[in-house]
Image (cartoon, rainbow, N blue to C red; front, side, top):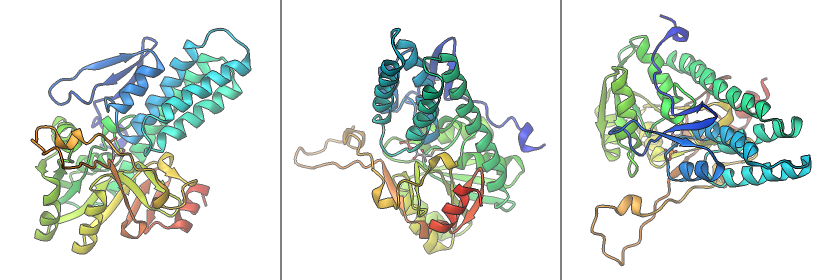
Amino acid sequence: MTIATMQHDSVRAVEWCDDALMLLDQRRLPAETAYLRLENVPAVVAAIRNMSVRGAPAIGVTAAYAMVLAARAIPDCEVAGWLGAMEKARERLAAARPTAVNLDWALAAMMAVAHEYPRDQQALLAEARRIHEADIAGNRRMGELGSELISADSVVLTHCNTGALATGGYGTALGVIRAAAATGKIREVLVDETRPWLQGARLTAWELHREGIPARLIVDSAAALFMARGGVSWVIVGADRVAANGDVANKIGTYALAVAARYHGVGFMVVAPTSTVDLATATGEAIPIEERDGAEISEGVDLPASVAVSNPAFDVTPAALVDVLVTERGVLRQPDTCGIDRLMSGL
Ligand code: MRU
């Protein structure tokens, strides 16, 4: 079976349906498969903030459809006023989550169409659909490219959720794992639970189970032990932003995995579409790191009032710890400024 004909992608986190944006509410998974119907920008901003939808590419696709909702809500007016109102919607959406650059990328693409075809809701909807479809196609391509690097009978370790739920469909890092599993290469996937929001335990485990891919849930802090025991061939993760020098922002804990992988001689693979590469951000130091509510960590713990809580949602892995960056345009080994530049300029 070729990857193009595989069925291994049966869920959509984001859909445009009957003139509204439908989001699979990821806060309720895996207990419940419930959809939110959103019809205006403030509702979409809230859904991105509260993680009903999450994962950098899925947030980008969501924001693209939200711009169609924005256009629909603007009363009849001159082009300048219409563009001003669209710009306000873009700003509100862009501020919803700061680290995932796909959000800005998708909004910029939508604003380009808004300028070219002012007040044309159909043109905006066509662009949002194009962004959505291109994301899925890119993920399938990355699945093919990344899975070629995986040997038969491999145990791979993944972090957070980078699957169909985190993207337009199919997934980035989990897309590579799906593609490798479809060709019989995956003995088992070690799934980090991904504290504090449990994207691994709640979402990745759910996706892998639905597709019959063997999986084992571990606490985040057990990853180094599994690497030390031997037998882990790759750590495979996604990204929220890749800086121009190849530094990678991704879910908190990714940096520690990269350090442990290098120490134990385990390959470290980042899988991200070029919409996640941000040439305007020179290095990882300049990537804004979202700080989330401490209650996500302390809930259920009787924490003494004098104890402070910090909850950075992402960290930055230096490019030097990345063995391979897989994009839809090709595979870059040991990414650095020159390699990223070549990749992005198509040389
Ligand atoms: O906070 P989240 O769940 O939005 O974080 C998601 C991640 O960190 C993913 O690894 C990243 O967005 C890539 S998803 C294809």
